[in-house]
Amino acid sequence: MPGNKSKAEKGDAEKQLRKDPYEVLGVGINSTDQEIKSAYRKLALKYHPDKNANDATAADMFKEVTFSYNILSDPDKRRQYDAAGFEAVESESQELELDLSSLGTVNTMFAAIFSKLGVPIKTTVSATVLEEALNGSVTIRPLPLGQPLYRKVEKQSAHFYSVTITEEESQAGLVCRVSSSDKSKFKLLYFDREDNGGLSLALQEDSSKSGKVTSAGMYFLGFPVYRMDLAHNSTAAAKDPDTAFFKKLDGFQPCEINELKAGTHYFAVYGDNFFKSVSYTIEVLSAAPFPEEKESLKSVEAEILSKRVELSKFETEYKEVLAQFTEMTSRYAQEMQAIDELLKERNNIHASYTAAPQIKRNSSSSRSKNKATFKENEDSQGREKKYSRERSKKKKWFNLHVKLDKRKPCGMD
Image (cartoon, rainbow, N blue to C red; front, side):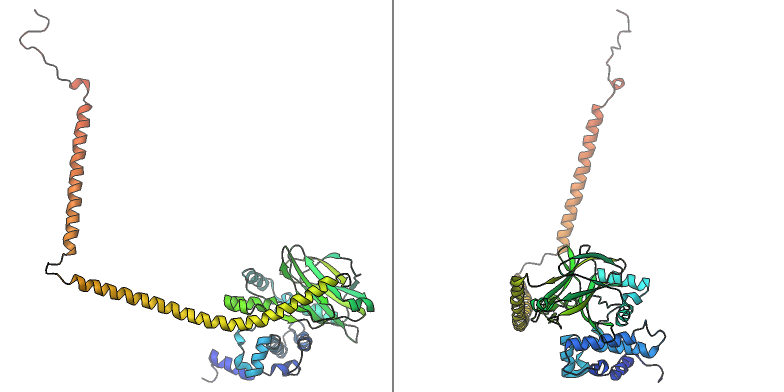
């Protein structure tokens, strides 16, 4: 019936209704990652379910915006889409970013369990926090350079900070780092000041485990600095260990902002735990006292980029050798089996050269059975003899045989 469509038909219909991701986000095909992120965040905030309760149209737009961003934010998927459209993109593997503040307690518990089991779960900053920042209704605390600050932020909430730098400090470079000694999850955020005085999210760095702490950092050093997208790596690892190795550096992507101009800049720490608050330390440093570290970072990241190119070439060689190895292993097993079967057939032919009657297996089994029966009889007889000997040794005093002289009465001479 026309009204009852199969699941496959519904899926095909949805694919046909998919809009061009660039058109959905309102960006061009040559847009930078930063432009794509900015467009996504504005649209996600506009159509977020928290702001549009019971609005089916807004809910559909939010899904479409998220779907489009998931394609264009991933270098591989974006390249695949540009080459062959939606057919080249695995829509089933699209990851959604969860706003934990909009989930109920039960759903949050399930998300926490899956995260503990190693399932990569991407979370996004609460729409409420972003809206308050955009409206300019957040409390901002000044943060002096070189002075660490220890604080605690509630889950799905944020602490905002302002940092003012001079022209000299801008030229030297700036570093903002946040760490948590209790290994809490958090996000380090950087905001741009809008014309209306509000703040719009420009950069986001998720915390990652590093030794006994979790940490995140932003480095504005005047040259391209790279960040590692751990969610990209964990997704590859879940599919295949070999793929995870060769895709390990695919998440190594350049940061959108490399330097900060003189003036006031805004950072925030967002609590990303499922249930508990986040204890953290934040500090903003001038890079002037760290010239060696600055050069070392530039050198190491250049080597990592070079290694990424080498890894891509090595992957091709590895797969070719692996295919040959798999083929040789399969042939080895087949040849071994064929040889064993030929030798067995040869032995059977040798054994057929005889005029003697073949020995039946039943006769050998009956002999074994007779031997076992004979042995059981011998054991039974031995036990009976032993028992009789032991019984004779245990005769009591009143069974002693006493010989009497019947010719004379007792007591008479």
